[in-house]
Structures are given as structure tokens and as C-alpha cells.
Amino acid sequence: MKNIIFDLGQVLVQVLFHDFRIKFAEAFNTNVDILAEETVDGAHIDFMVGKISPDEFHRMTCERFHHFISLHDFKKLWLGMLGGKVEGTDEIVAGLRRKGHHLHLLSNVDQWHFEFCQNNFPVLKHFEKKFVSYQMKLKKPDQEIYEQVVSELKASADECLFIDDKQENVVAAQTVGMDAIQFSDAFQLKTVLNRKGIIF
Image 1 (cartoon, rainbow, N blue to C red):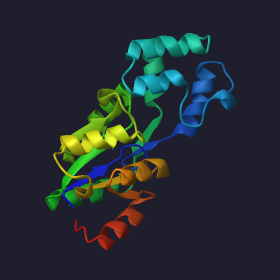
Image 2: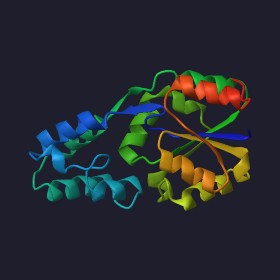
Image 3: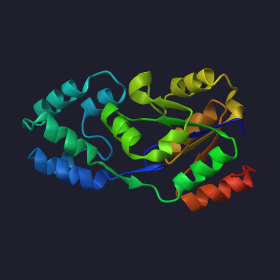
């Protein structure tokens, strides 16, 4: 396989959204039940696709929930959504890299989370290209983001293997012609890669 493309959240880095929702509700004096399961508010989507700046995201969130916290405290709260590494995946990535595979990243991620991951998760050094939603102004599972990745890699879709924890993102990748694996844990990923004859 010419290019192996990894998702970031829940594949390489844990996202602790359940715990985050509780802390967010406490900080903004609101009911946790009104928070969407995977996004706090529409402003988060705009932040994730680079339509608004970090300052605008902070202001819009405070306005949305009618409660002010400082930018510093808000960023600290937001970064608290991220946990540690997903156990075992970094070893797979390092092994693939040692064997000469071309590794890339494709993630729906905002500026704060991506910068934090760049600075705190050494596994990211193994990726040649990092395709992130806030820079591309696109997000998974929109077909255009996969097509742009294939174009920038100067590859055909069938030369790309995509690994993501969400079914809708895997299906979207397959729709454009990529091979794809829905990730559940490192043991499962090792098993599927071995079955595909990908050595690491």
C-alpha cells in the first residue's frame, strides 16, 4: 500500500468527551443534557473547519451560554477534552514507518487541539503530511476532503488505506475508492493489517 492515512482522535489520541461535557457544563453553569454528544455548539464546527479564530470561538461560546470565563481558562478547559495516547497504536505507526510505509494524518481537529497534539504526542513525527480540517476548511465525511488528500498525495485512491474509528468516515473513504479500516483498538488493527499483507 503506497499511502497509509490515520485519523487522530480515538485512533492515536484519546478524546474524553463524556468527562469534558460534565466539566464544560459546570464551567458554564449549564445543563449537561443540552450539550450535543460530540460537539458543544455550532461554533465548534466553525472552529474545527477554520471559519472562526480561537478568540471568536471563545467569544461566541460565552455568548451562546450567557456566561463568561477567561480565554485562558476556556482554552485550558477545551484542551482537557484530550486524554493520553491510544494504547498500542503508536507502536504500530512506528513499525510501519520503519518498514518504509508512507504515513499521513487526516483529522477533523481544531487549531488548539492540533497544536497541543503536535507538542505532546511524539507519534505525530512519523507522519509525512498532516491533513487537518481547520487548515483545509473541510471536514470528514465530506467527499471533497478525501479527494483533496488523494490529489495532494499525487496518488490514486486505490493506493491509499484510511484508518478511522467512525463508520461514516470509513464509508466515505471507500466511496472515493480508498481501502479503509474502521478502528476499534490496536490489536484489531494489527490483525487487519496482517490480513492485508501489510508488514510492520
